[in-house]
Image 1 (cartoon, rainbow, N blue to C red):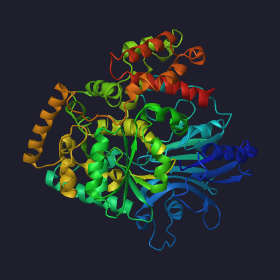
Image 2: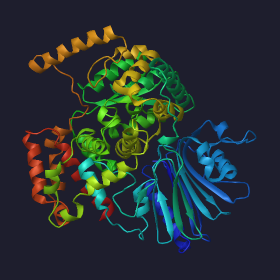
Image 3: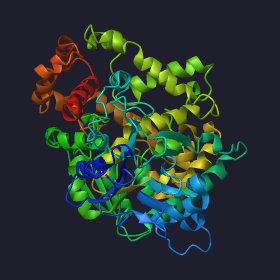
Image 4: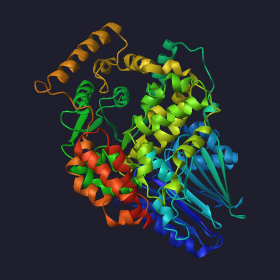
Amino acid sequence: MSGVFGVIAPHAPREVTTLANQIGAALSHREWYVTDVHADETRGLALGRVGIGLFNARPQPVWNADHSMALVMAGELYDVDAATEKNEIVKSPETVALAGYQQLGEQFVNRLNGAFIIAIWDAARNQILIANDRFGFYPLYYACRGGRLIFAPEVKGILTDESVPHTLDLAALAQYMRFQRLLGERTFFEEIRLLPPASVLRYDCLDSTCSLKTYWTFDDIAYRPNVTAAEAAEEAGRLLRRAVRRLAGDAYRPGVYLSGGLDSRTILGLIERRPVVTLTYGMRHCRDTHYAQRIAQAVGSQHQWFDLPDGRWVREHADFHLELTEGFHSWLHGHGISTLATARQLIDVQLSGWDGGTVMGHPASIEPLLVSPANDAALLTRIYYLFSQEFTWPSIDEAEERLLYTEPMWPRVRGLAFESFRAELARCLDYRPDVRAEYFFIRNHCGRLTHNMITMYRSHMEVRFPFFDYDLFDFLYSLPAQLRADRNLYRAVIQRETPRLALIPYDHDEFLPTTHRFIRGAHEAATRLRHRFEKRYPTLVHARHTLYADYENYLRHELRDWAEGILYDRRTAERGIFQPSFLRTLMQRHLSGLEEWTVGKIAPLMTYEMMLRRFYD
């Protein structure tokens, strides 16, 4: 994955060159990766970048005229003319960012619009400045301790520095088992943190200290309660179309990973250039495969389908998935990884529908208990339940948590999942009441769980995010949340902008995402009858699978030996973290087939142990 890295060690200047080269090597996952390193042992400083050979083609660092400032960057900027003074001539994203910093200092990042991570060495101020975009699209991890700063787009880059302790964060462990993701800025290691979105990290080389500042939050979005539904649909459609046009209109080959959902079809319908490549993965008879094919035919895309007939692909790619996502994403979410080698031959940039349903309005994040709870405690209990049981496969519950850990470990982790969750939610409670739960969701579900899929894709292609266009995002969250509820606004945008695609069912419920009430109502009634018939006479009809991959049965068949080889292994037991008898009980429950969704309890256990073997041992 493209990113920036660096080492600042004023008290051990001779180490920086070696460390920077080791980081670059650790991050280079494929032969086409490009790595640049600049080391200055007189200052104890090294900066580098790693790229996949698409964006940021110029060598880095980029310097100012007198070589007093150096910049490394991954990503891209939009609205370049607005980011610099009118007399600025050079328009590459790197030089625009550096010129902006020279003119405005730390405030330069407020003028940038894009998806980026930037690190700047300023010799005059004797400081390193690191800044990212509003949503943290290019992850960066860092450790600031012992008089040095080390940062990289992957944790493994920081772990090349032997001075960074490999002390496990037990709150992160508790979170991972209860929510299948980490929250906030945590990693699995106490000394390593994730740079929050919309942040500026400054390292002062004189006193070896770090300071962190947030430059944008939800509070910066003006509230517009008087916008009508019709006005909202018109403006949201206009802004989304403009965003897609900008992200699909340059020299890079665009592509869309197409499902039967709303996000990818909407983007595809708004892409004006042809031909465009679409890719779909899933079992032959799943809803995604079926409806994606219909959408592709309606638009006329060059469609590629990748079958997932059984679970062997999971095992074949599990090590690479772990290498890319470093355990933050369990193997249960590796879908798509088997397509990457082929996809790179067909497209340069993926226009991703990543969490478009969230920003356009999703029933799960806009409900009365989240938008207008009776009090903060009601909000806490509801969103805690959703994170642990609804937003992905159900995780372990309170009883299972007590049985999971060994007797010596239990007192050390007891209560950490809940208390750390409450502390993280507390950071959002002062935001506008109707959107604060969504802000928490975007930061801790989208940012800490599903964004790991973007990390996986970025190992082979660049990714762009039309739904997170700054102007579109600001407009949508300026509206009262209820205006986006029940996908009403989303359906209106689809009907207005891509009417043909409003007549192809949505895979979730197989209803039409149209605003024409008669057409939608008649189709919904017929679909409900078909669903009842399929349920009553399953041998007479072949119902379409809801999910694209059958992870439950993968784990009972093709992946069983692999799973038991990890869960029952001596190394797992000797760590003293998990109770071996409970691991066996949990696997037996799954194999019995008497319970649904137990895979969501087992996969994180396996992935955590895999993470320990790869990055901790």
